[in-house]
Amino acid sequence: MNYYALFDAQKNLKTVFPDNGRYSDLIPDAIQITESQFLALLLHKHWRLDDTHQIIENLPPPPEPPTLAQIRARTRCAAWQFRRALTQLNWRATVEAAVAAAGQDVVDMWEYATTFERLHPMIATLATAINKTDADIDAVFELALTFQE
Image 1 (spheres, one colour):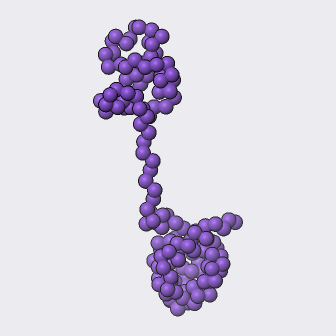
Image 2 (cartoon, one colour; image 1 turned 30 degrees about the vertical axis):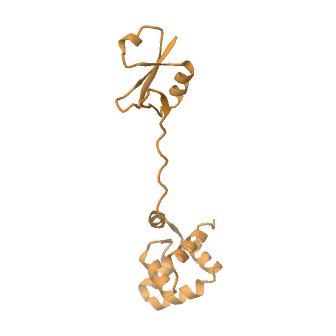
Image 3 (cartoon, helix red, strand yellow; image 1 turned 90 degrees about the vertical axis):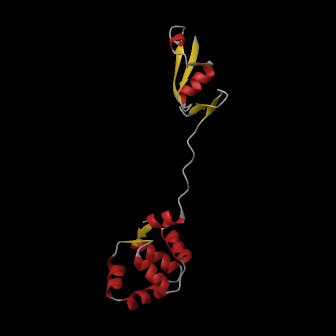
Protein backbone atom coordinates (compact mmCIF):
# COMPACT_ATOMS: atom_id res chain seq x y z
CA MET A 1 0.00 0.00 0.00
CA ASN A 2 1.25 3.47 -0.93
CA TYR A 3 0.17 6.74 0.64
CA TYR A 4 -0.25 10.13 -1.02
CA ALA A 5 -0.93 13.74 -0.12
CA LEU A 6 -2.39 16.56 -2.19
CA PHE A 7 -1.62 20.22 -1.54
CA ASP A 8 -3.33 23.33 -2.92
CA ALA A 9 -1.66 26.12 -4.89
CA GLN A 10 -0.57 27.81 -1.64
CA LYS A 11 1.02 24.51 -0.60
CA ASN A 12 -1.47 23.86 2.20
CA LEU A 13 -2.61 20.29 2.76
CA LYS A 14 -5.84 19.43 0.94
CA THR A 15 -6.12 15.70 1.55
CA VAL A 16 -4.28 12.44 2.09
CA PHE A 17 -5.23 9.06 0.73
CA PRO A 18 -4.01 5.47 0.64
CA ASP A 19 -3.68 3.88 -2.77
CA ASN A 20 -2.92 0.41 -4.04
CA GLY A 21 -1.98 1.70 -7.50
CA ARG A 22 -5.40 2.59 -8.86
CA TYR A 23 -5.51 6.36 -8.43
CA SER A 24 -2.01 7.77 -7.99
CA ASP A 25 -1.36 7.79 -11.75
CA LEU A 26 -4.60 9.72 -12.29
CA ILE A 27 -3.59 12.47 -9.88
CA PRO A 28 -0.25 13.83 -11.11
CA ASP A 29 0.08 16.35 -8.26
CA ALA A 30 -0.11 13.64 -5.60
CA ILE A 31 3.06 13.34 -3.53
CA GLN A 32 3.98 9.94 -2.19
CA ILE A 33 4.40 9.91 1.60
CA THR A 34 5.28 7.33 4.21
CA GLU A 35 2.70 5.52 6.29
CA SER A 36 3.76 7.45 9.40
CA GLN A 37 3.40 10.75 7.51
CA PHE A 38 0.00 9.59 6.28
CA LEU A 39 -1.17 8.87 9.83
CA ALA A 40 0.20 12.15 11.16
CA LEU A 41 -1.38 14.15 8.33
CA LEU A 42 -4.65 12.31 8.73
CA LEU A 43 -4.88 13.34 12.39
CA HIS A 44 -3.62 16.89 12.04
CA LYS A 45 -4.51 18.99 9.00
CA HIS A 46 -2.17 21.94 9.67
CA TRP A 47 0.61 20.95 7.29
CA ARG A 48 2.08 22.48 4.17
CA LEU A 49 4.87 21.94 1.67
CA ASP A 50 7.98 24.06 1.88
CA ASP A 51 9.82 25.22 -1.24
CA THR A 52 11.76 21.95 -1.42
CA HIS A 53 8.55 19.89 -1.24
CA GLN A 54 9.21 18.80 2.33
CA ILE A 55 6.11 18.48 4.49
CA ILE A 56 6.26 20.92 7.39
CA GLU A 57 3.90 21.81 10.20
CA ASN A 58 1.83 24.90 9.44
CA LEU A 59 0.03 25.79 12.63
CA PRO A 60 -1.87 29.01 12.60
CA PRO A 61 -0.06 31.73 14.52
CA PRO A 62 -1.18 32.17 18.11
CA PRO A 63 -3.65 34.99 18.60
CA GLU A 64 -2.24 38.38 19.47
CA PRO A 65 -2.55 39.14 23.16
CA PRO A 66 -5.22 41.74 23.86
CA THR A 67 -4.10 45.32 24.24
CA LEU A 68 -4.56 47.18 27.50
CA ALA A 69 -7.35 49.18 25.87
CA GLN A 70 -9.13 45.94 24.84
CA ILE A 71 -8.77 44.51 28.34
CA ARG A 72 -10.14 47.68 29.89
CA ALA A 73 -13.04 47.76 27.42
CA ARG A 74 -14.27 44.34 28.52
CA THR A 75 -13.51 44.65 32.24
CA ARG A 76 -16.55 44.90 34.49
CA CYS A 77 -17.45 43.64 37.92
CA ALA A 78 -20.42 43.47 40.25
CA ALA A 79 -21.03 46.56 42.34
CA TRP A 80 -20.45 44.59 45.56
CA GLN A 81 -17.07 43.39 44.23
CA PHE A 82 -16.05 46.95 43.38
CA ARG A 83 -17.07 48.27 46.79
CA ARG A 84 -15.31 45.43 48.58
CA ALA A 85 -12.10 46.19 46.66
CA LEU A 86 -12.38 49.87 47.62
CA THR A 87 -12.85 48.85 51.25
CA GLN A 88 -9.77 46.61 51.20
CA LEU A 89 -7.71 49.38 49.63
CA ASN A 90 -9.02 51.89 52.22
CA TRP A 91 -10.43 54.06 49.42
CA ARG A 92 -14.11 53.56 50.13
CA ALA A 93 -14.71 56.68 52.28
CA THR A 94 -12.75 58.85 49.84
CA VAL A 95 -14.73 57.52 46.86
CA GLU A 96 -18.06 57.92 48.63
CA ALA A 97 -17.20 61.53 49.50
CA ALA A 98 -16.35 62.16 45.83
CA VAL A 99 -19.64 60.51 44.79
CA ALA A 100 -21.61 62.77 47.14
CA ALA A 101 -19.82 65.84 45.80
CA ALA A 102 -20.34 64.87 42.15
CA GLY A 103 -24.10 65.38 42.01
CA GLN A 104 -27.30 63.38 41.98
CA ASP A 105 -26.70 61.49 38.71
CA VAL A 106 -23.43 60.07 40.02
CA VAL A 107 -25.04 59.32 43.41
CA ASP A 108 -27.83 57.43 41.64
CA MET A 109 -25.39 55.42 39.54
CA TRP A 110 -23.28 54.64 42.60
CA GLU A 111 -26.27 53.53 44.64
CA TYR A 112 -28.28 51.64 42.01
CA ALA A 113 -25.84 50.21 39.47
CA THR A 114 -25.45 46.46 39.71
CA THR A 115 -22.20 46.41 37.73
CA PHE A 116 -19.34 48.80 37.15
CA GLU A 117 -17.51 48.98 33.84
CA ARG A 118 -13.85 49.95 33.77
CA LEU A 119 -14.30 52.51 30.98
CA HIS A 120 -17.56 54.04 32.20
CA PRO A 121 -17.25 57.84 32.36
CA MET A 122 -18.31 57.81 36.03
CA ILE A 123 -15.25 55.72 36.89
CA ALA A 124 -12.98 58.19 35.11
CA THR A 125 -14.68 61.14 36.83
CA LEU A 126 -14.29 59.57 40.27
CA ALA A 127 -10.67 58.59 39.58
CA THR A 128 -9.85 62.18 38.68
CA ALA A 129 -11.70 63.47 41.75
CA ILE A 130 -9.63 61.30 44.10
CA ASN A 131 -6.34 61.73 42.18
CA LYS A 132 -5.98 58.11 41.04
CA THR A 133 -4.20 56.97 37.89
CA ASP A 134 -5.42 54.52 35.27
CA ALA A 135 -3.10 51.93 36.80
CA ASP A 136 -4.69 52.53 40.23
CA ILE A 137 -8.17 51.96 38.78
CA ASP A 138 -6.98 48.85 36.92
CA ALA A 139 -5.76 47.53 40.29
CA VAL A 140 -9.19 48.12 41.86
CA PHE A 141 -10.88 46.08 39.14
CA GLU A 142 -8.21 43.38 39.30
CA LEU A 143 -8.78 43.02 43.03
CA ALA A 144 -12.57 43.20 42.66
CA LEU A 145 -12.58 40.35 40.18
CA THR A 146 -10.82 38.06 42.66
CA PHE A 147 -13.88 38.06 44.95
CA GLN A 148 -16.41 35.30 44.46
CA GLU A 149 -19.92 35.07 45.88
